[in-house]
Image (cartoon, rainbow over all chains, first blue to last red; front, side, top):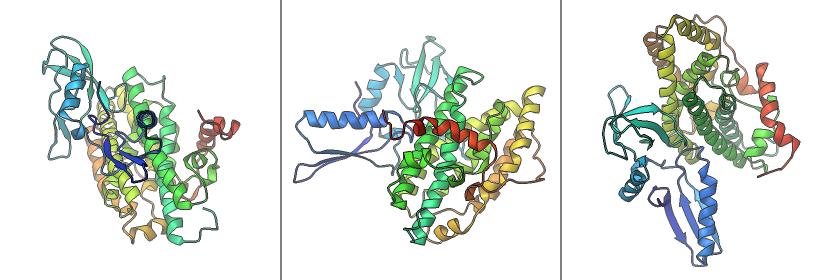
Length: 141
Length: 258
């Protein structure tokens, strides 16, 4: 499965001389409900690994971008049927133009946006016009 | 702000953070009222997703306001234990959802303002405000795009949808002027490179909204009256009802968490 490292939300891990561990992370979206769960899981994982003194700090700037998702992260997302973020460009009028999203099942570029908002803040809903499968797409952000 | 803290810059920063945070919080509360009631399921998800983004911004801003105030109040205390007169949001965000066109008109007016505000606030010398803006600007751009597309689809749609969209624009127009009000709070912080003077956003907002109206075949309403006072804690009639619903659970079970 995908790691928080592959998602590009871990900024830094610092171990002090006294054994204190500080993990610095960036939230994906301001209101991402997974933020607190991830914090708790990181603390638990570090406790289990033998580090009792752990602190998780969220840092907002610089803001997280989908560019920070690693190549491996993109492969894992696609393997799980979630289309990874595609390249997007800003037009002269400031309108964001997104290049076509590839179907994670059959790799067709003939896909259609169903809804700009999906099951989570970071996803949009698409369907493939070739194999007809619906799928989630991590929005370029 | 408590009288113990007399540093005028801290007091201004507290109020400014509250103003931005309350705008986001109250609009999030209004939008979440659409959960399970939107015209189609995709819109249900869209409006609640937007609410979630705004709630995230509100949490960061209220948490920051609490730390600036240094009187021991956290985000929950500020959201749930203040009364009407202590909220600093503009009247626009507290207005009732109305029909879908009213919600879209409110979204268009607010997201355009918030997008332009955050674009400028990214350069704030206050690290926290700049961070919220850097994160929020991407969200506001998405909200703005959503509102813009619906405004055009409804305005330049059927006779019925055009009529409703125009009625919504007419109804909410008097509440837009307040977005650009500025007073001594902003003035003190602008001189320090911390805040943005909202009045400077107005020309760009006017042009942008004018362009959307033109594309959507909507008419800019004449300005007959404008609504003001939210930044000083004077609110419209519907606000007390909103707070009652938003704060009920927290006040019924003080200090509860899950």
